[in-house]
Image (tube, rainbow, N blue to C red; front, side, top):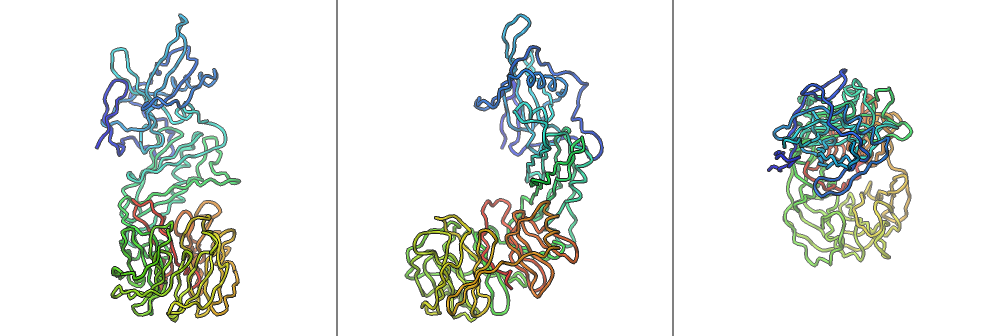
Length: 569
């Protein structure tokens, strides 16, 4: 599929997916931009008093510049910085603007000089940041390239002041575009990328993808990777960039998230098992999930993937073997409560033989035989159920239920026996995690035969421990990184990390699996290393010392809620 782009009287065909060509500039040379002909000044008229910019598509005004100094600067930089170019086939396509230069000629007659700006600054175009199209008197069209800094000024964005970066990604071409408001010291770009580059999803024998840095002008470059293999992601930071004057783009007082990441456009989603170096030991494609829950069996840990297509898949974490649960008939199901995560069934976190507890519609509790799909109703809640956890003996089940007053972020723990009879109620076990009026799942599990742990959110994340016998409650801080591990993670993230799930290595090991907004990490203080495991979710440690990570398909915009509470192992 292609779009016909009419530019100043000619027809140019441009692919929707941005066909790009260009020259490569890497390392120490000064990026002066493309030049296909001898330098000729852009034919801007004299006497310009105002510059008006509007969207080409509908004429919406974008900016008007009538300050004498600003107008003179734009015209001067246009004459000096614009360079003759050609029109490619297909022509790269960015945002189109109509630019009008308004003024008076020597005879004091008003005029308007019009041309089209093709702004490609935030696209993955390699050679040119932007082009101008000017229709000559003979009807032919001339093309000119202009640097990104000139485009910034034209659109009212300052090209001076505190060093700032803007980062745009183009997954389909495995590209990261970097824009700056100041000239960049060329040699700092290769160093910034190479020194911080991390690759996730590689098999043990797979080489890291190669990349090149392409400069369009001194304030813009594109990092273009070779096509990323399926399931592979890359991440690098740009706080090492320096201005041409020697100033750092990193702001120590207010560190900006100058990091970029890309993932393979063919990533199909599912589980990976990562080792200490972040290499993938095994993987399992499962597609898109709505929620991921733990499901401990009698002899092995497993996870249950709640598929976006309605299937529920139980995966053995020892070897990746899996089974799809059968369709289940739900007798006497109460009127369901709506929720905000998109799945109407929540299974307990333990399987005893072929029996598992489950809640349907955030209301009705069942005992389910997963071999046959047969379900028996046990209990119907008067308020929405937020979570379910099964006792180690398989004869009791805990429900995290909403307070009776209204749908808030608070919850109570209700303990029932295998017949669905009430044993204990603990009030105010948790709070936080969402605003009032929304229903989201909250991790909960039994840590022993008597104690139930519930995650608490807000402020310092913690854990509420409920005594299943008398309903008493105590609150403690959740697992924390050691000082050495926190320092390694901060260095890898590029600023103070914000871990919201910390999974200490079972058995007293020194390593940590960590979840941050940037994705999953494996932090190994003994090796002085924090390995990025990709943009997915760190689920739990396996018995053989690997970290199970869930990653959604690259086409998915859905967040997979994680119900596990493995940090208490």
